[in-house]
Image 1 (cartoon, rainbow, N blue to C red):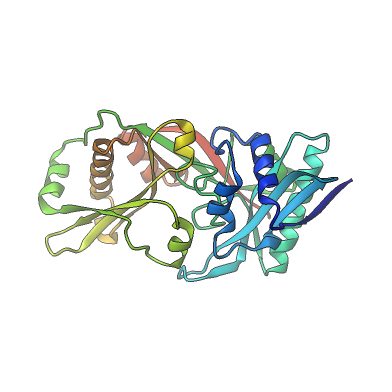
Image 2: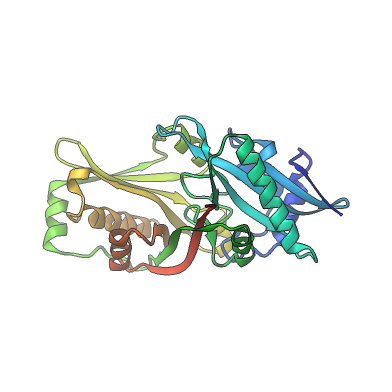
Amino acid sequence: MIEYRAFRNDDPPRLADVWRTADLGPCGFQPMTSAWLEACVFSKPYFDRDGLVVALDGERVVGFAHAGFGPSADHSAIDTALGTTMLVVVVPHEQHAAIGDALLARCEDYLRRRGTRTLMGGATPNLGGFYLGLYGGSNLPGLLDSSPHMQQVFRRAGYVEAERLAVMRRPLAGFRPPVSRLQLSIRRATTLRVIDEPARRDWWEAATTTGIALRRYELRDESEKILGSGTFWDMQPLATAWGVHAAGLMRIDIDDGRRRLGYANYLLAEALHDLAQEGVALAESHVSEANEAAIKLFFKLGFEATSHGTVYRRP
């Protein structure tokens, strides 16, 4: 008989074994270790043992699921009104589907007890806050199409698609920024600042990016006003498992008055050129398929959609 309980301090080695055994697809870091789980999951200041449900067949751990929350509006604390089950990981087992369904149901119960009014499936940059670098790539993409077993768990429970995300990649060997009159005029009027290990913008960013290397590119005018910025990170440990030096674009922000005027194109192109000069071989970003302007920008700069992920919502 399968039993279920909350996370215990002696679980990490067995959870790492479940991760190694389950089929998470090419965007699940392997080989998983308890040390990496500690760094990317258990050490987070908002980790709650009751939100990580473990399934056991006798003494053997055969699966786990993890539920969590996003930040408050000002990104200064956790807001439990919106909750998600980030992952449902099950080893090959004769009761595979039933175990996954039961894990999800227990995560939903946990979220409701904490006050969640909207139940989601999959992690995103502003929902969940765990597994960056272990699953998904440059950011948290919901549940990838390369993890069909996890997607099926949510579909069986009646979840529907809330958002589709495209995983965009571009090799950087020989990358050169595009040249146009618009780009040259922006170059003459601005300065690009490169900041390694920038100060985190708020508590949520600090909590979710602790332990990873950030690089921020800031575009400033003559008065030193920031017109836009792009934040990348060194995609460890996934990039090491892939055997490539990769940088992930976490966010790009353009001042409201400068949008759709070529600044995002210029900033991103200059940042990619700088990363290529530093020896980075691959750039990756996740983009909502509903954001047609962003999709168009990435295609213009030579990115290709290599995978897709889905964020689910329970009606």
